[in-house]
Structures are given as C-alpha cells and as structure tokens.
Amino acid sequence: MTQPEPSQRSYSETTTRGATMLFSTNLAAKFLGIGTLYVTGLMLSPEDFALFAIAVAWGEIFGFVTNGGLQKILIYRGKAFRHLYGPLCGLSFMINIGLLAIVLAIAPAIGRAYESDDVVWLLIIIGVSVPAETIPRLLRAELAVGLRFGELSVLNGYSALIRSIAIILLAVFGFGPYSLAWPFILVGVFEWIFLLRYTRIDWRPTLPKLRLFWPTARQCVWIMPGLVAMSLIGNGAYMVIGAFEDKTTIGLYFFGFQLTLGVFTVVSQSLYSVFTPSLAALKNLPEQRDRAFVQSMEMSTFVMFFLGFAIAAVAEPTIGLVWSGKWDNAIPVIEIMAITATRPAVTLVVRAMLEARGFWRITTMLSCWDAIGIMAAAAIGVWIGGLLEITYAVGAYSVVSAIVYLLIGAKYVSVPIHRLLKTVYWPYLIGIIGLAGAWGAAAVLPAPGHAIFSAVINGTIYTTCFGLAAIILQRQLCLNAMRAVRDMVRNRR
Image (cartoon, rainbow, N blue to C red; front, side):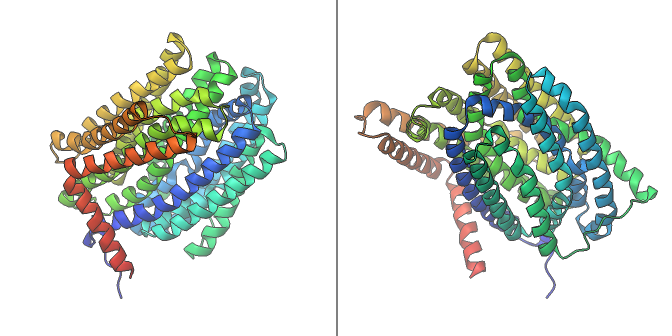
C-alpha cells in the first residue's frame, strides 16, 4: 500500500505523534541527565564545571557546524535524499576533518588564554568527536525526512543512556571534567552503528561533482555562519563570564543553565526535529503551512512554559534537598532563567518555518543577531555586578528576543500579529498564574517538616493552578490536544 504524502495527513496528528514520541524519550533522557548531574554535582567542583563550560563554549562552535549544516539541505530536499546523500557525505567528511585541524591548531592558544592545560585537552576531545558525528548527523536527517519519529526517539533514548552511564562511571573513577567530555566520542560512534543498521541505505561517501558542489557551497555560505551563531547563542555567555569572572561564578551559572535551559533544549530539539520536516512537507501549500505554523507555536509555548514555571515552582526545596546545600547559590539563577525563558519557545518554531522554506540567509542573520545580543547581555551583567546581575540581564534579553522573533516570523505567514501574540502570551500568563499559586501557598501555609514535602506540595499546587487556568483561558487548545492524543492512541491500536 502506498504511503500517503505528508501533505495529505493531519498536521496536528503527525506532529503530536512525533512530538509525543520524541518528547517522552527526551524527557526520560533529561531525567537521566538530572541523575547524572546529581552524581557529578557531588563528585565534581564548580571549578571542574567551569573548565568544561569554557571548553564546550569554544568546542561546540565546531560541533554545531559539523557537516557544514548539509543535513539541513537534505531535509529541505527530502525527496532527493538518496540521490544527494553520497556526495554530500563525502563533502561532510572533508569539512569535518578541516574543523578538527582548526581545533588542534587553536586549542593551545585558548588554553593559555584561560591559563589551563585541561581546557586544551578537553577541546581536543570535543574536536575529535566532530568527524565521529559525520554519518549520524546525515542519517538522522533521513529518519526525519521519512517522519520516522519512533526510531529517532529510540535512538535518543539509547544515546542518553550511554552518555549518562559513561559520565557517571568516569566521574566515579576520578576523571574530573574529562568525564563530561569523553562521552561525546562514545555517543557518536554508537549512533553511527545504530543508524547504519536502521536506515538501510548505502552510507558510503562519494566525491561530490562540481555541478553539485557549487550550488551546495552557495547554500553552505549562509548555513554555516548561522550554525556558528547558534553555538554562541548556547555558549557565548560562558565565554564572556569566563573572561571576566572567577571560575566559581561561571560554574554556578553553568550548573543553573543545565537545570533550566538545558531542559528547554531537550524539549526544543524534540519539537524542532518534528516541526522542520513536517513544515517542509507543506512548503508548497501556503494555507496549510500557515495554519501549521500557528499550531506549532501553540504546542511549543504551552509545553515549554509549563515546564519552565514548574522548574521555578520546585527549585528551592528540590535543590537544597538533593545537593544538601552545595548548590544553593544557584537557586536564584535557576528561577530567573526558568521564568524568563520565552526565547527558546518562540525561536524554535520561527526557525523551523524559515528553514523549511529554505530561507537560510534570514535564519543566519537572526542567529547572528541573537548571538551578539546574548553575549552583550552577559557583558552588561558582568559590568553591573555579579552572578545575579548576569542572569537578570540575559533573562531580560530573552524576553525581548522572543518578541522580535515573533514580529519577524509574522512577516512570512498570513496570520494577524495579534493572533500570534495571543498564541504565545496566553500560555505565559497561565504559567504566571500557576507559579503565583505555588509561591503564594508556600508563603501562607505552614512549612512542611521536610523539603521533599515542600517540593511535592509546590508542584501539585502549580500543576492544579496551571491546569485550571489553561481550561479557562485556552479551552480550545486543551480540547485539540486531548483529541489529537486520543486519535493517536486509536490509530496505534
């Protein structure tokens, strides 16, 4: 039986099924990550986290541009995937070996700048992981093009499990910050083997011909700077803080980031992996494409804001309980990041829409602007004061950036701006109501006898308030979500 074209399916059903699979797996992966962070938080010092944060801030610039972003072209040109794979794989290997050579050349200079030999070796380990990611990045694109989100979710689950076990074992055996770096290579090798088995395509690279090389190179000219900017969006603040503040400050900031924006990154990657190929399938159907954009924004903001305010609601009792006061100084950082994280929820949908339509130049310009903005906000925070001032400055920028992305995204869809603003800020208001209920109850009710009871009570009150506010203010969205999940369960049966 012929598989129906994606444009003939219900976009809501397809994305809900895909997002549910990936989100469920990645949520489990994040719980593994939190468990890993618990162990490393006990075994490693803030200085260890600081060294790794500095290495990642520089190393992930090369990690983001792995393959030169050619997997994005494969997703955009989905129907020609098997025809393009061989030459683009060969070109990817050439790019990645060049990236490794650059890492090896600059690592000593970066180590001297931060006065640490450990940073040099951490960078080299991360650099070696770039060629190991060549085939996995491309074959992941093949699964995305085929909307094979179930296999992607299985892969994500195994990768997270291997990464967590490796980090814990290395930390226990005294590898210090290196316990966070070696799993980069291990996971890349595992995904290579897994995807070769499940994609069943001729994975061998071939040399790209000139008639394919030059058009691809013209697209990469815009894709690669955008990927560099994306790495700076995630890690540029570490560079700025590491250059002006002590290692304890950057260690606390990195720890807070991992417990908040790290969670958002897991969720946003799941949604982005679903939205981009799904929107690309509708790029020639303007009316359905615009409706899908709104549905994607509704799903993204509802999920992300629920999680963000939930983290803020339970942060104080949970962190004090789990790490016995060792990381209490990071609690305000976590709460501020969680409440102000509007940017990830909005930008992932706008970027998915633009990339699905091949607007590489616009996405690159937006990413560069975003990277400069985050680094400038961190610098302003450093100039004003210390850890809290940095977090407030970056959080304020996140709120402003979300509005700018929304206004720019509205230019490329036939949807009134007030509709998009309502789509984003009704869920944000619902999150505020839920958090106000949790914090208000904590201030009024007698303190429970143990921190675990405080966390459970805060979480329960928050979830109840959020759910009631969602039913009142966004009743139709709740009904659509329940209907989509119900249809998905029926179809699976």
